[in-house]
Image (cartoon, rainbow, N blue to C red):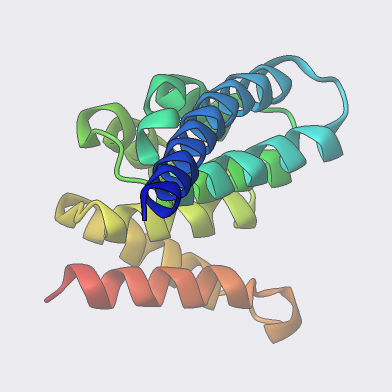
Length: 171
């Protein structure tokens, strides 16, 4: 009986130690991927870093919160539109402070020069953050995209994201 109790205590101790190590590793990983997103020259590596950060957010949101400003800046300013979209998707993976994210979303949605993938993720972020004041801008974006005469030139993913955002925000 005493051996069983000692064995159970040892197993519990190892489990607790393992989860602490996992938490420390995951926090370090978040910092490492944030640095990669910030400074790596290769767009594919920056996309990878953003996706890894989204995966870490599924484990524990607190690991990403120190990197919210970097994600917002990447969404707004990265030279590669797919990196920007990946950063926006990462912001969708956790509930960042709206005051940190909403100004960037508004700026992107109002800029008709933004690439489709960036606009699509901004529309999804607008819906996620209940940015009802962006409905007119989203409607203008929808009209602009639907006005393209050749249906092949229309960005269907963008239209889908904008339509979903308008539907969610109109409720």
